[in-house]
Structure formats: C-alpha cells, structure tokens
Length: 82
Image (cartoon, rainbow, N blue to C red; front, top):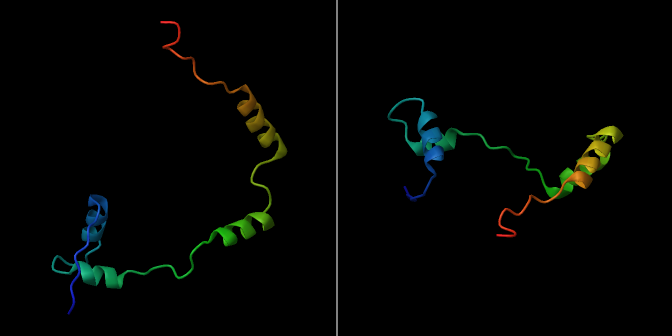
C-alpha cells in the first residue's frame, strides 16, 4: 500500500482525531469513511441564484446602508499636528 505524508493544521488534526470511532482506527479509515459533497457552488451558479432570488434587503434597508456610507468619515489622524 502506498503511503503519503501530509501536513494538517492543529484544528484539522484534532477534528480528525475526534472523528475516530475507536482508538485504533487509522486516519486513513476516517478519511475514507467521510462523505464529500458532490456539487460545488460555482460563481456562475451563485450569480444565477442571486438573479432569480428576491432582493435580500428592502429599499428602506438599502437607504439606511447608503446613508451610513455617506456619513462615514476616515478616523482622525492622531499624529497630525505634532
């Protein structure tokens, strides 16, 4: 059997370790037991969904966002004038 060495973030390692059904179950067995979604979301699919979905925000909510953007100013430069 061929073997590969991989690197994992600590969080991924801990999740893999916690997914074992019994202490001697190998990580390979855990990975092979896992299910992976067949369909992935593409940008084209997301765009099509957004074009056919109702608006996420009402006109009033959009107006509130636009007003907040218009009133937004950069922070005061605390180093200016020293």
